[in-house]
Image (cartoon, rainbow, N blue to C red; front, top):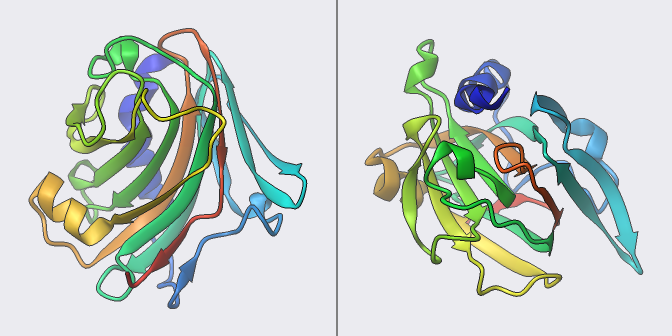
Length: 217
């Protein structure tokens, strides 16, 4: 069900309740070490295939969406006063152009990385940032998610001008991004997620993801 994307943020909120504080530095379960089974998956419209892939001496996550949308997530409380910077790498393999990504019918991306801040017992106060590889919006563009509204901000980290089948290394200061995009000064986040999806457009998309981890700078 395509409308299920509206509940992605609240679903992750439920999952992150009761999790412990992670140590410094914060390393999420590593794809390079084969720790995929520590991530959890939930389907929203069909099943994106997430599996480990190795080319030469590099092991990473492959995400293949065929008219599907499912999320891979890891609930973890991260102290942003100590480790505010999220690091990851990714590469688009099968490019998708879903049309207007600011509208529900175009809310598909070859690659997304989420960070989530829960809203206490009121799940509708939960906030998220989606770092996306956009096909339509220029790099550094920001807009509200068409399903979740201003509770989930979209930020184009990469765009159509960035080459396919090429690894890019990203660093985002989550503390600063939340203040800028949501107008909130937060001290921690509660979960990280990955999604490659193509359910709204009915297309196919494929991306590779490297390890994700938090550092002080």
